[in-house]
Length: 153
Image (cartoon, rainbow, N blue to C red; front, top):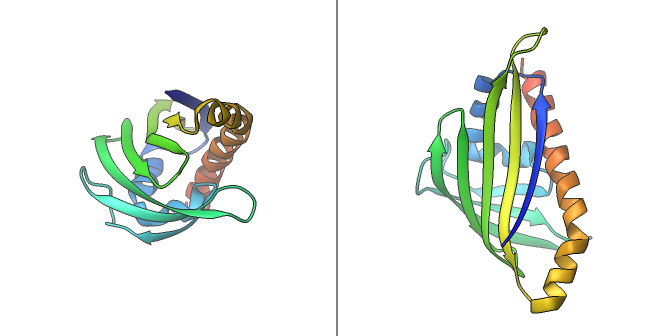
């Protein structure tokens, strides 16, 4: 299994961050690489699924389906996904904690994805080459989330 993790401090309160990440219909607004949410169930609920159209490489897109597996309100959310061939056994994990700051409450967010690369040795090589871009997309997603929460007040 491969694990890619990025952490950022968001200058917004955890309660507002949790509200946005819990709204499965809003992922295209902040997750870098999500072009549109094509089917959703509203507020994240264990066992419920949502579907996306995602950017992959260059002009290529894919369709993914995610299922919410675990929710610890304002602490952790775990979803599993399919549709990212040649990556298999995708698990997406968001973790949060409040960070006191002179400007008010901030949120530490950790964005992790775990998966098994397919295609044998070639897939592992491709995976090694794509990981820096994946890390950048996680950081951009967290900046997008922070901007969205800030814009909404």
